[in-house]
Length: 245
Image 1 (cartoon, rainbow, N blue to C red):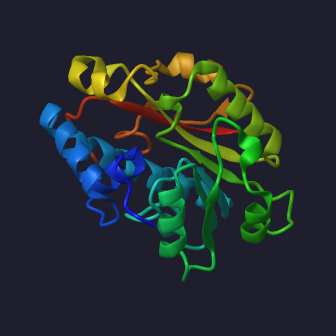
Image 2 (spheres, helix red, strand yellow):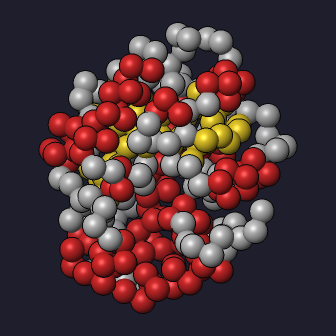
């Protein structure tokens, strides 16, 4: 498959994480955003560290099956590397990411990559789910919904979380993030991202994901969520949390 000429947020993230699986268009886009705010790599490194801490916490609580939506590239300490004993299904809508993800995971029996549109959870490949998760319908699942709701309208977010709740066995948990209004200080970035960039407060987001119950320690900046060791002066671009069925 030829390298896309249009950048993709998942692959731009790969640039900022120091990965090797992105295109020249993604590299150029990352450079452009860095010219607007030179700490964007640090912002998204803290987001990945949040995913690591949250997925490891769920794993310690007994969850060993993860479904990742809008996954981007399955590298740079993504979920299957953070919790190597777990089974992980990554999903995305980008054909290049899916094809690349399958290549990267071809020697990993506990992880795979498939198509799923977060705007319509019914598109999730049931055969891929069964292949990775087996036929056990009672064991809880860890859902990872990070980096995508900012590109979804309120109605779509509510629909997604209701669909996940309906799909989830009892005891399942969902790792999520939301974008704060910090980017309003960088109008050049907002202009690039376009109109469908939805910043929210924690209370606004909490209302959208019911009936999921927010777990302790609640919704916090991703750089401090369950992280007692690191102090940072990084502005709060994203909040994160975990919710339970």
